[in-house]
Length: 279
Image 1: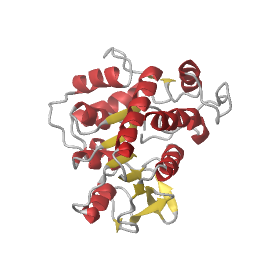
Image 2: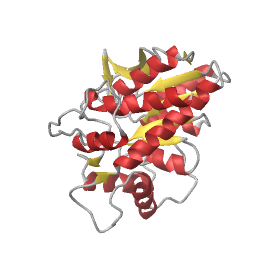
Image 3: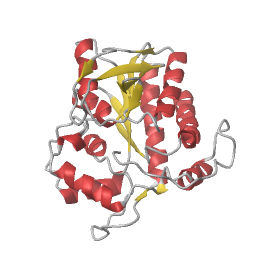
Image 4: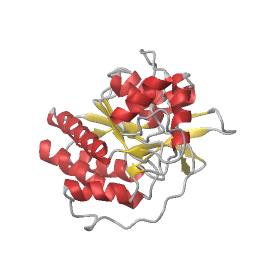
C-alpha cells in the first residue's frame, strides 16, 4: 500500500510464534493483529485506489496491462470476492475489511504453488518485496526454506540503478539474503514500481525463473512477462487481484501489508508448513 498508517497494539497469537496454530487460532490472530478482519486501510483509501486502477493510473497498475474493461464497479466486485472488502458500493467511508478465511485459503494456495515448483526439481526462483518494513520478514523465511529445499535463488541486476518517478536521486536494486529490494542510499524503501523487476528479467533474458514470489510492481511485472508468480497484496492494491482474475498472477494473498513484522510470524509458519507438507 502507499499510505503511512498507525496500528493499535495487539497481543501475539495464543501460542508462541514457533508453534503452528490451528486454522481457528490463525484466524483469530489475523483479526487481532489486523492483518485481516477490520484492517487499518480506510474505505475511502480503498475506493480511491479502485477508481485509480479503473482509470489505468500507472502507479496503481503494478506493471500489468489489463485485458478486460475493469470499471470501478468491476474492481469493487472483484475485491469483495477475492479479498473480502465490503461489497456494498454505498459504503463509501469508514471501516473496511479483509476476510481472514480468504487470507488463509490464498496462503495455502500459494504454498501449494511453491511446493509444485519445488517438486519439479532444481527450481530457479526470484524473490522481491516493495514492503521492507512489513512483508520482508515473510520473504526472508521463504528464501531460507527454498534454499534448504534445493532451489537456486537468483540475484540478477544487483546494483542496477535508475531515476524513478517521484524521487530526485537514483535508486538501485540490492539483495538481502536472496530477497531483492529497492535501495535509496543504504535504506530499503517502499515501492510500487515495476521497473526494477523488468530490469532483472531483462538481464536474465531467455534464462527465465521458474517462479517469482513478490508483491507490488515486482509481482506485476513478472506476471505480465508470463512467469509463474505468486504475491501478497493489501485491500487498497487491487492490481494483483485483477492480474489473478486474468490469469497473469497465479495466487494473490489478501492481507494488510504493513503491520509489525512479528505479527506475520504465525501466517509465515502456516505457509512454510503448507509447502513442506505438500512438496
